[in-house]
Structures are given as structure tokens and as C-alpha cells.
Image (cartoon, rainbow, N blue to C red; front, side, top):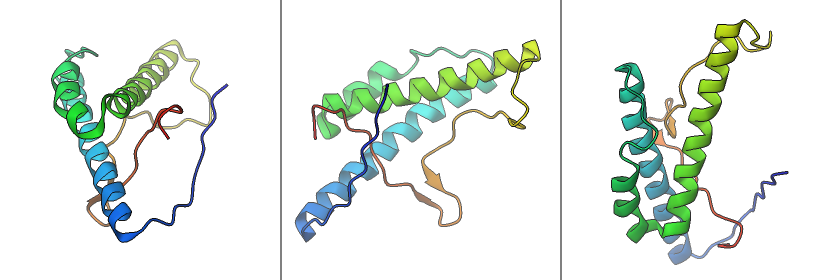
Length: 126
């Protein structure tokens, strides 16, 4: 069983800057990893490990290793889900409520043309 906790924070100005920086950097990591994977998928050469080590080493100094691992893990889950839906579709067993299957998207608000500010934090890190 998985659980998601949502918190309403009331940070000071200094804490708010740190949190915004953390969320911004998390979105950059997700988007870079997702870009690599989407390009590989559309070129027909998807490899789940491609680019992971380089991005992990780049972002672990900024976000910390646990947060970096969690964001990469969450991206892995999204892609596994996408591929399982594709398999179900090819077998003709796709649930009727699912109309369109598309690869995982970027953490971006298309209307505002800005990154979605969110992060994934492991339960022993908050």
C-alpha cells in the first residue's frame, strides 16, 4: 500500500526561496530525463537506463541523492505504466474508459508556459 501526504506549508521568505528552488530543480530533472526517454521512444530505441547515471550524478549534489533517486524512480513508474497500457491495447484488453495512451508528459503548465513546481520526497527525508 502506498500513501501520499500533502502538506500546507507556511514558510518564511527565506524558506520559500529554498522550497521554490528545490521544486524548480526537481522539475528540471524530471523534464530532462523525460526528454531523453521520449526521444529514444520515438526513435524506436527505448532504453530505461539511458541518461540516468549522468543525470543522477548531476542532480544529486543539488537535490540530494534521496530526492534525485525518488524522482528518477517516479519517472520509471510512469514509463512502466505507459508500456503496460500499450501491451494491454495490443492484446485488446484495454479498459473501456481509457481512450488515449500517450507517453508521460513534462512537469509543465501549458497555459502559463511554466514548470509545475513539485517534488517527490522519500518518507525518511521529510
